[in-house]
Length: 196
Image (cartoon, rainbow, N blue to C red; front, side):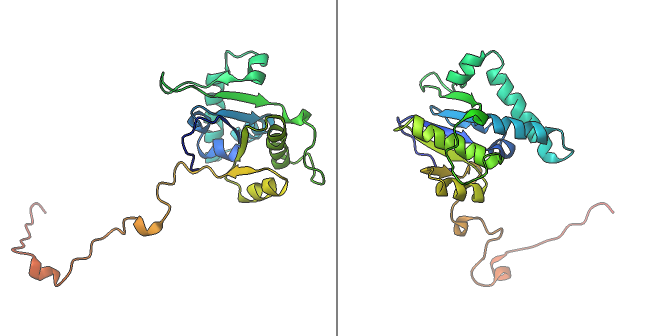
C-alpha cells in the first residue's frame, strides 16, 4: 500500500486478511486512525482454532490487539484508544473496535449477513458519518475491493508493505553476464583437494 506522508488524518478500516498477512499491521498506520470491525475479530476467533499455519497468525494478531486494548474501557474502545507512538515527535493515531452488526445497511441489494459485506458496510457508514475525513478500506481480497467500489466506497487499497519493487525489471536476475570470453579473462586457476 503506497501511502504518502500527509498531515491529513485518515481512517483505515482493516479486513481480516490484513491481520492474517501481517498480525501487527494495525500499528503501521502512524498518525491515522484504524478501525477493526467486530466481524474481523469474529473471523480471527474462528481461524485461530484451525490446525493450519494461518491459525498462528490469527492468534498473534489477537494477542497484539489485546496488548494495545487490554486496559481500555468499552467507552474508550468506541471513542478510540491511542496506538503506541513510534516517536515523541509524531502524533499517534487511534484504534477503534466497531460493532458492525448494529450499523444501518448501507449496501441495498446485497445480503447483509456475509462477512465481507458487513466490513464494507462499516467503511461506507464511516465514509458517510465522518465526511470529509477520508475512509479507506484496506484488504488483500481483490473481489472485496471491487465490491466495495461498486457499493460506493471511494477509497479502497491493497496492503503492500512487503512489496519493495513495482517493476520486475529491477529485480536481481541471480547472475552476472561477462562480456567476451570468460576464461580468457581469468588469470591462473587452480583446484586444491584436501581431505577425502
